[in-house]
Length: 192
Length: 147
Image 1 (cartoon, rainbow over the protein chains, first blue to last red):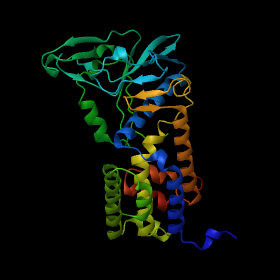
Image 2: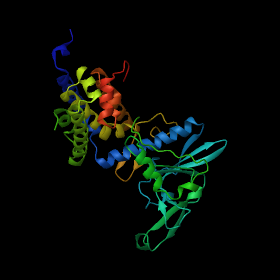
Image 3: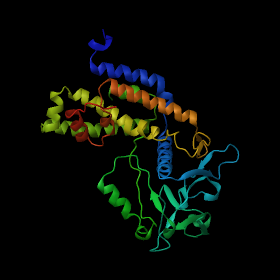
Image 4: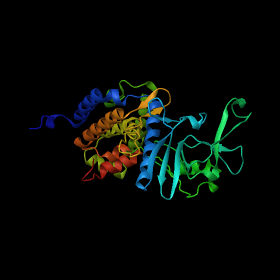
């Protein structure tokens, strides 16, 4: 006889969650920042998987020399040369998947936008300059131009809805000329 | 705070607890509205045994999944062939290093949660729904197979 048969469903779920929390709270108890980092990593892995399913072979470029790890660029202020990226190769061409690369608009050179992940052709030169209007000229401004971008991806951990799509597209005045394939994708689902 | 949420969020930081609770409040506010206006899906779900207390449990699990477990589990993809995680752990910032072992732990955690949901007859779709109306629709229209 099922011992749970006489226990109300609500209590059964509570008991199961107590057991779950006892066993896994160490695993899932994270800060907001950590959760957001995990989701971004998840988006990157999903994108790599997408390219792999399309026939590309992935390779980690510029890993951290000390331990071979993939150094994830978390802010556009970082120098992309010091961080890792993915090279995806296929007979038809090579592309790079990078994080936090600014895209400067074709409309105006003072307009820039930084999606979470960008796909650019292999060996695209990431330009840099010192601009007095940027961090008082104390930091280098790294960017690519919009015509060099194949795809841009923004990681949002929520289900998509039309206003989100429209507002996001509206932020990128550079987008009409962006992309050789004109393939834009958004990672908006937190499904595995 | 609901007892289930208290258990699940016991060791979490306050802002995260707040974010989860806020989501539950928003969902439950819509559910109460549906109850008040006797919405078709609410009535149908109620007839199938989903009273307010049970629906609140679903909303709590939905909030926990959407805010914590879903985003966390999205990173657990050791099957990516490029060697990320298997050969190259991911260093995110200066403090976080995501390794294959950690990825496996998260997978196990996610699988265990999924099993509990299935075992208690909770459609996985309810955890991924954005709005209370979506949850009510699924509760009112149970699927034969889910997981």
